[in-house]
Length: 133
Image (cartoon, rainbow, N blue to C red; front, top):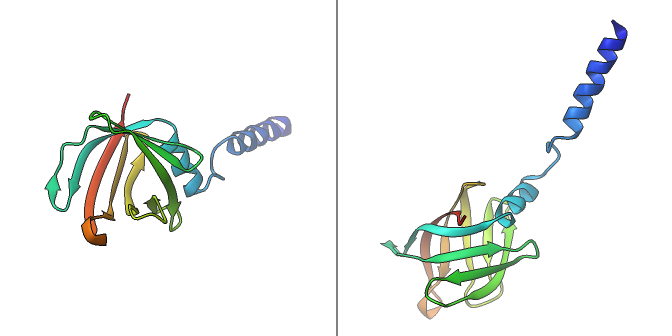
């Protein structure tokens, strides 16, 4: 009886130690963002729905790579901020954008924020991205 109890306790301890309970929200979100290519499913900028044929790769090194169906590739930086509740793109540049992460799972990434607009103004945007594959 005691051998069975000890075995069950060891089994439970082993299972719990192999799970991802110790992973922080930032580590989890970083892993989700960098694990696949993302494509824009829905994009609204300054209140206007925009057709956006763009695929994005978020690198674990804090760089993103932007591939457009229009032949306009580019790259920049990204970082999670505010306890991984927000994301900032291209900090320290004229093109800085920031957004609150509304949803981030392996099947959906949605955010709402502002991006640099003409004459140094901020323009609101909403975006929904889904896996590209």
